[in-house]
Image (cartoon, rainbow, N blue to C red; front, side, top):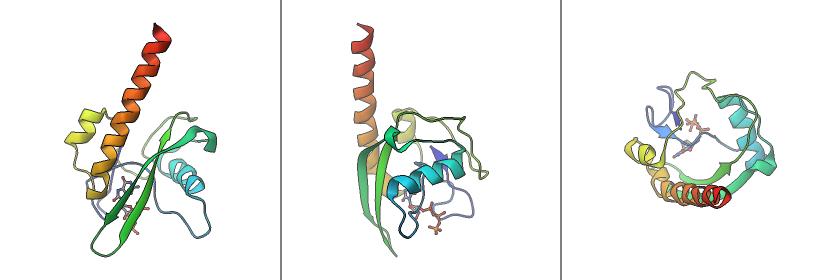
Amino acid sequence: MARRTQRQKFAGMWEFPGGKVEPKERPEAALIRELQEELGIEVDEADLRPLSFASHPYDNFHLLMPLYECTRWRGEVSGKEGQEVEWCSVAEIRRRDLPPADLPLVDAVERAAHLHAQTALSIAT
Ligand SMILES: Nc1nc2c([nH]c(=O)n2[C@H]2C[C@H](O)[C@@H](COP(=O)(O)OP(=O)(O)OP(=O)(O)O)O2)c(=O)[nH]1
């Protein structure tokens, strides 16, 4: 999770790293660009999997935000724009202050985490 800076809307809240799609840019390309700019990692499109989406009416705009699971990357994750970045368990995500649009997404993250745990168990047994 990344912490929004004082310069941004929802300052101090924790968010899923990413950002706005530019004109004519595909969402996956936008996410790959944002992950490089914000976290300093390189991601291949094949390693992004759509997980869910948020559709949330804010006061002055409607946010339609796809959430992807990223299963592989190159480099070390760090906050390249001065923002705090932390790996969080689902329980920890639920304790953080998130933008209102994100709350329904946490359930999707939890389901994906359970699936991965089951896969890991079936590989191990
Ligand atoms: N990256 C990200 N954005 C989120 C999340 N939840 C949420 O409501 N948003 C909103 C905040 C922003 O309005 C928009 C993402 O835009 P951004 O991060 O590129 O833009 P920004 O706030 O720096 O700039 P701006 O809106 O002030 O122009 O989506 C989230 O989990 N991750």
